[in-house]
Length: 139
Ligand code: HEM
Image 1 (cartoon, rainbow, N blue to C red):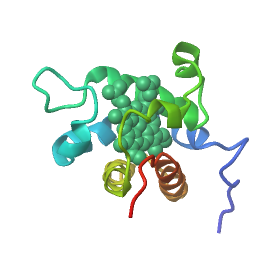
Image 2: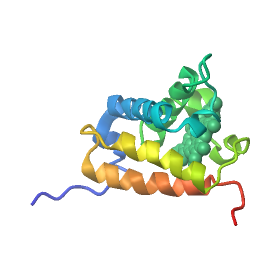
Image 3: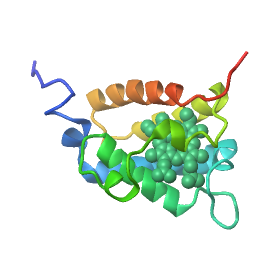
């Protein structure tokens, strides 16, 4: 049995999957959203037809992912600190939106470029952050 360093500082998800896979993860995430989650598409900036998330959103989230996974700071050097809760306040995020978002991300994570340990680690981390971004009281 091989033992590997745990995921964390010094062995980040970015170290394990690399920039190409990180950017491709963002692309698959929005591909899934465009194809399967119209209510989620509708709260994003869209293309002119209004049926797909705009390329600028893909680019910003792709840059964020590279940085958040442990890569170079290509998001914050342009946009400043992500301040995720603040940047999501204009969107009503309840349980349904959270779960729709996570369906897209979990589908995007099902890909051979994502190492199994990284996949289960990221599923957990994304679930935590998505829950933290809920900003509407639910019954
Ligand atoms: C919980 C459900 C979520 C919903 C409904 C949601 C929705 C949105 C929307 C509507 C935008 C604005 C896109 C635009 O400019 O039109 C956005 C941007 C963004 N989201 Fe989320 N999001 C969610 C979760 C997350 C999570 C979990 C993360 C991080 C792990 C995240 C990271 C970002 C980033 C980095 C941006 C770009 C901010 C910027 O620079 O403009 N989001 N999201």
